[in-house]
Image (cartoon, rainbow, N blue to C red):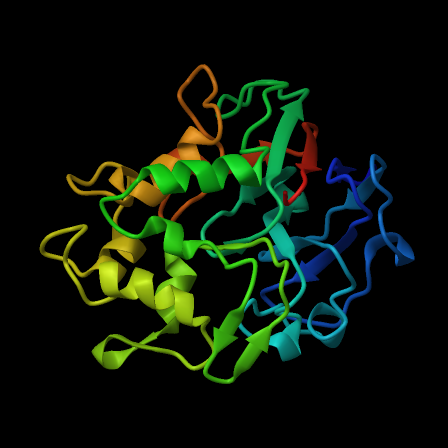
Length: 287
């Protein structure tokens, strides 16, 4: 029986560490191939039959997180918070000859990541050879800055003088924290968590977790978690999602092919793709 594989293409301009991590049942892992994937090179990732896999792409070894069996934490220097990374997700079901693959811009990212398919057969939820996802972090930042109804640009990690109540992060980290993760750093009474860069207070002041600016009867947090694209007031209508979409291109069916919030399935998901279909994941520069 032939193994199902994804092709990973390093277009980031620098060496890249790639990990296949069992997010559902964490265990220690090493970089695929034992070392970095050289710039402009590719590797084949053999899919593992687990429900919650994450493919991490990192500038350095994730020696204090994945290699110790835990996911990296952008807010915790002790858990590789000073390392730039992004991830994609997959679930492989060999008994049903199918896989699901998701690009996630929900939580935290540094590298723009895209996905494209070929040999799709009768699968209708993707367009063959179309590249889904944004290719430029700079473009994402530019688009976020255009939306001034709320402080969406405050989701961008500062390049210098990154201070928390617990200490400082090094300069030069290119990163965006999505609303989903940012709000988890807000404490009751709109206070900022001591592990969160103080710059994010601007976002919390603009859109507090418990506020109702975005969705009316639901809090900003509850609406972000529960609403879909079809809701009268949807996360898809917010500045964050509009900026992410403006930084990418939809296919001929209007699908963007990546998630910006938890229930962004209409725009984001590639579910039950036949395992005969070829999937390539591309990683682009963080600046």
